[in-house]
Amino acid sequence: MDQDQKEKSLFRRGGCLALLILLSSIAPFVITEFYLSILCEALVMSMLALSFNFLFGYMGQLSFGQAAFYGLGGYAMAMLMMKVHLNFWLSLVAGILLPAIIGLVVGYFCVRLRGIYFAILTLAFGELIFFIVFKWHNFTGGDDGIQGIFPPEFLRSPIAYYYFILIVFLLSAYVLWKIIHSPFGQTIVSMRENSERTEFLGINIARYQLMAFVIAAAFAGLAGAIWVPFYRSVAPSYLTWIKSGEPVMAAILGGPSLFFGPILGMFIMTFFHAWVLGFTVYWPVVMGTLILAVIFFLPGGILGFIQEKLNQRRERLNQLTEK
Amino acid sequence: MSFDVLFNQFMSGIARAALLFLVASGLSLTFGVLRVLNFAHGSLYMLGAFLSYSVWKFLLMPILGFYIAAIVAALIMGALGLLIEFVLLRRLYSRGWPEQLLATYAIVLMITDLVKWAWGGKFLSIQRPKPFTGAVFLFDFPFPSYNFFIIGLGLALVLFLWWLVYKTRLGDIIRAAASDREMVAALGIPIPWLFTWIFVLGSMIGGLSGAVTAPFGSVALGMDIEIIVECFAVVVIGGMGSLPGTLLGSLIVGEVYAFGIMFRPELALAFIFMVMAVVLIIRPWGIFGRAER
Image (tube, rainbow over all chains, first blue to last red; front, side, top):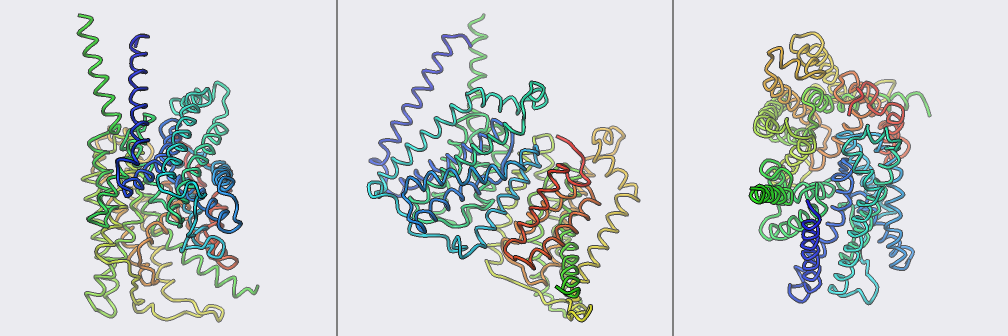
């Protein structure tokens, strides 16, 4: 791609992004409150999907326990606000720090493994964290969860909280984008491409992967922490492997090789979910069918498919101009 | 703490280990040959338990009912395994493992809904079959005799799998395919056919193990994930795809669980994970596992 084309594509991408941001900032005045709450959920879950895809799409490690950090963020927020009446903002910080610390411990073991073994171990640790939260009734409320978590006064209305979520979402997406395109992020990508060669360059793979794991846990925790005050409650179901499967699915659906893939996937899934729940409670079977359909008919995901088509078109155009 | 109590706990650990081996061996066998981790193995186990309950209820036979139900459940799960391998997995062997994992995860979701739809969210249980209804006294401690049935079945499965893998021609092929699939195919052995039957065998073991847990009184939604997490601990500790590893892993996890539950019931699973963590630090591929990437 020459400079001119690169600038043009960057410009086009910037235009798309500006349009999306504009659309999402006028959304509360256009859609009903029901769809606004779905939109909030989609944004929060997209943060979870981004944190998952940071590990999967860029580092090449599939974590099947990402929801555990999401849930831990939510629980840290809920318990600090409800039990010690800590300030909303300080609880939010704790909602990032606690998952990061637990992520450091869990990640210490997980990053020793690759591929399917990594997936198993993250799943197992995720279930362990779920199990502890679920069983420790007098500390976490067990099965009942915790209810009645409210955001500060000025964020109490759904529209105000929507903007809060939107800002947090945009900021964390920007930070993740910056991390991925930093030297650290490029090292992570090189580990996916060829871990042996990266190791020969003198890079401690385990340490880099652990850092990435902690970053992903922190972002997942932040997502959980901002969701809980919106939903006013938290429950152990936030930490289950069914929840962990959602970001995996979103990344595969949207396209894990692209930064925006998981976001698109999660938006489609969340709105589809809201729509399906209108006439059936059997959402898992619908999601299962969707997963199989994507695996068989859309390898590379939606955005991957579109990009492939665009590349093919560009090839053809190039060939034509050369002639 | 007296010797009696410890012995009693040790024996219930053995029974748990036998049950874990029943489930994990199917998972490990499938992974060893196909190199596909079947997330749905726990779901086959759950569906096997629910099916055996329904068949048992339908038959209303006091003695044979349970055994027939267990065999029927295993056969139906074998047929379902055949369907899953033939329709789905077969098309995915050339793809990456994330897709294979997700495909079996999709089956988990579907079976969960199927069970929810067909049986509802109730807790079901089967009466313990004769002659395993009473208790056996070991050092004056009552010990459910059904546990001995489970231990016996576990031992029988160990022997059967050992015979199958190490003493038969099929076993030679299985071991060869586990170490070099292309070479085996080059020798003219139909690998797709082998994969199908191994998957069917694994599914049957899964269904059977679900059916025989039904008399423990724990047939309910969620039993799939409960068992699969412990099975993952078993295979991670023992080494994926290794028969002796699965046996040793089952014993470790079963005993750690049995003694863990004595001290802090809510932390029993955490104790298992601590053992797993220690094993992973010393041998990241499990005790009998092979290092690979």
